[in-house]
Image (cartoon, rainbow over all chains, first blue to last red; front, side, top):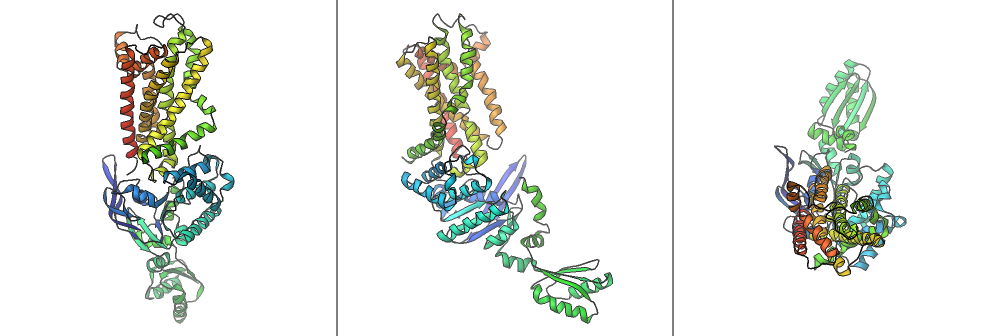
Length: 323
Length: 251
């Protein structure tokens, strides 16, 4: 559904050339739900804009829904839906009017376009807002309208750029309910960008982590977490000498890494923490170290990002919220 | 064929809010109306204005001013849509890029003509003499000028999409000199020679002179072909620059 080879985009900022996206090689098959995860400025939106014919690549090729974006942008546009970061509907235009217009933009006949608009108004709980100017809608309502606008022509591939930015948790959940239901009904492929870790983790079946314009990891969230981060095992002991000894014992566990001892707390990362913990505790007992508490923490995608880049995605979050 | 039907789609979208809220039409013509009401009466007896009612001299110019103020700000809406995301949404559809420009320009023209008719209706009871054939020709000439100015305004808005302040800066810097140098407000005949020279370099001047002849019913006046030439040139340049800008807004 999406195939890129060496896709690159550079911008000139003053006298410097900044490569926003470098040598992107991605393959997304029909029916997949893929999240592009990365900090702000990682190149997510730039990649998406190239895949949706909004921005010409500086180099490389991209085939989207069977069409080469450069050779046949119109063909690409016919087959894809695009829900950008902004609001798709103009402020002064009525909700239903914009949906009908969108159908007409995609070449639907007038009556079919109206019928489809009503169908989507019903599907996304927008019926009561049909005659309201889009500018008067709440954030959650506008986002649902954006989804409806992107689906008018029943695209086989849907792009969503930061779909839930600015939405409260309830609206976010509601939005995803709609997206997942519509996907189930149509079997469309979904490609989204997000900087929300939990969104990528819980919604996507496949996560591509992008940083500085490059994809640095690509797998299911479960495998990324298991392979790249591992579980965090944390124990506390009675005093600091015990902690030092516990850390020494922890270091001998085959998959252990990031072993740290701080005051009386010892933590380490291992594969399958649930299986490792009983053995670890027995080894501590044998060495005469008494563990007071023990817990296994499941990794997050942030741990994955941290182990890949040495930086936390969350560090970028507060600053990016307003952007 | 597709471009034609797409133009219809864009025009329908753009005109609908105007039809739903016709009062907006009046807001768009505040400036020319203010000049008409508060400046027009001062013209009585001004040399170069002619013996007849000053309205006969002033109104054709005000109609052109309408074209300048109204149509030149057309890009404002595109700027708002570019910032909001609805322009982007439409760019990711197979909609013809040329249609996206022409459809919008057509809406500006309909608005402009409605405003011009309204102005004429206002001055009719004040002693303005209407020559129907000439007035029609005058409105047609206004349409041609409006196509050019509207397209240029859209092109400017597209170019300034990332920095909207550039749009207002350029627009405001150009608009007032264009109005003052076109002889809309006062006759340029007695202007100092440098100012007169600048007025002659302003295409709008020729359109204003042609409009005065046309609204006086003098369709064969020598100023008419010059006005037509100036308006057509502005229209062609505007359309070329505007469609190019719209095409380059995406792939």
